[in-house]
Image (cartoon, rainbow, N blue to C red; front, side, top):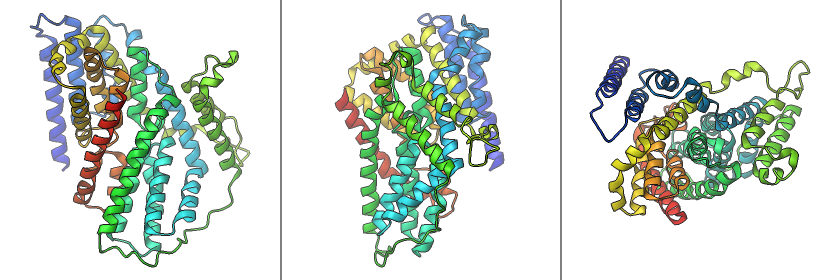
Length: 467
């Protein structure tokens, strides 16, 4: 397997590099300027190396800093500016908030209390796990959500004596899927959301606030969650091997009394979310007129280093905890934003728009459907972040060329990027659940395919109506 991976990486390395060199030094098209052609060659090099994971995808994201100043008229200062986009600081602050929640144990308490209170039947247990996974992944990255709930779910199945049964398989799958769906709901819920907000701000001067995102995304994700629950409900009901009698309350380990650290983190969390939601009202005060979602996120993260923990020698967060931060993702966002900006300013975006003019012959509904369908199934084999970074500039061109609202088309694609449910490699939550070795690939494919198709139709229908 390792030899196969190495061979694939080697092929991807040479494929990307040779394509880059040929295109860079052999521009024969008169319809495109030399700088746009160079940006196209850099874009294809990065896409190839992202696809084949020749080197860590985060390192590939540094290529704009190396190649754009050397081969185009953009200075290093201009290229590096997107690496410090406000959306990146929003993600940074949001992730520090999530780390504080995890370290305090607040996330686990919330999950246990919900399950203990509402776990009275297999359907209520299923609904409870899905709701906990969905809600938690709004604020904590979906990978951490799946990792948190996995041992709790396994313990529940042990208590109910349903280990290695169809119910256990469906319960684990529901956790993974709900984590991905919940991540769609907020800007900080998943990486593609953060990139999209930065992309819109950098290239179209469109600012999407935390509340504006939730107004659109929360109802859509809630509908998808609701439909997915009934899919699982139907599968459980249909399966005759699942014992539907004698379901008792679960006797999970007793939680200790809520600590002072948990209370402090909870208060900061409530204040932070409230500030995001009501920022429009806060901006009406003169001294808060420049307050942004990114500023709120960084302020809340800063507070964790000031507020003392119950251990008087430390604060709620310490610098050693920052090892958990996804520094690579921040570089990936920066590289993607720098590439997207180069596509727009070089004229490559206009050229791509001209090549895609044939799409004007198709209906808006058809175009939205094709874009979402392609995104969902491509994300099964590609990183949803890398795919979004590569895909969004092209989506922006298509939308502008056809006179469609870029923010709506782009948001539809970004939300679809979180809806890959068929394969273990499609999303981190899928991989986490698959690692238990309790689920076969075919189990995930059967349920995931149904989920994929339904989410494609749901997202397509809602965004078409919004047009």
